[in-house]
View 1: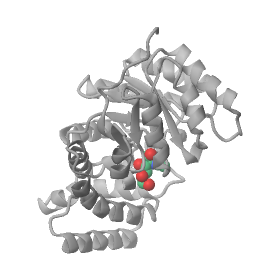
View 2: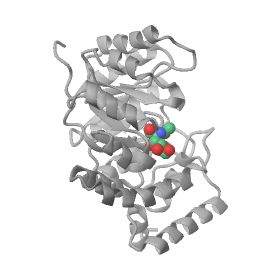
View 3: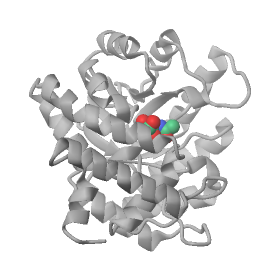
View 4: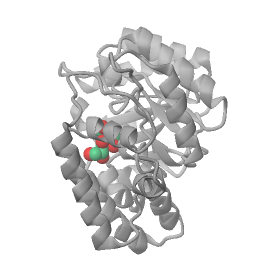
Length: 314
Ligand code: MN9
């Protein structure tokens, strides 16, 4: 590639999509179909698959490829699909990236190599090698679980032709704002902390990628559109309620809780893979009580799935 890759059309609300597993924890592509159609109907602006929320690190590479292939096929061009290809070492990531290219994914993304302590040259080399092997737009992914990359390292990696975006799951919003300023309007920044989506958008993010957009995409579509109009105050009013909900759920290991809530409100996404767990009945009762009290406090709250409940789906 001679010029920088361009993903300026990928913005908005992008679920870090769940991977769907059946009761025996095997990949379930029928359920993938259900979830993709549900999210597309909700009007999301793209899908980010096999990342942390997608339990990508709990899947083998064959499963990751099969899931990516299925999602790209089901989506069939209706929305951009970003495939997370991060793995513990370059060789595996390169193979996943080449596969993403072969199946027609719109972009790839990766956390930096993790577990071992790598130096900046090694992390830079990791991204360079993936980008050279698979000529697709690359969204690098800063998240403390994999070790935060410094802003100077992010800038250095951003000089690679294919690197044209950053998913930033951090709390240092001034860094997000600073990077946006330095890297320019065509370098896409996606805010990754759902409980601070509005703050991310206020700090210059072009989109939001996160796990809660599987469960409550409408809430965040509303937040995103208010931010687009510059109405950050109104957006933050909704964000505060959403954040109370999110912070309540994360106490219980949120992937299991979120999948359970979706299953209980009519979108059958199956189970989480162990060692993640599903909440037991007592925890779910407590969570539904919490949701009821939020609703009582706020009247019509912006929780899509409770609206489904009101429509009597459960
Ligand atoms: O970046 C997600 N992070 C992880 C994406 O999965 C570790 C977020 O969407 C969080 O799940 C969310 C709740 O803390 O912000």
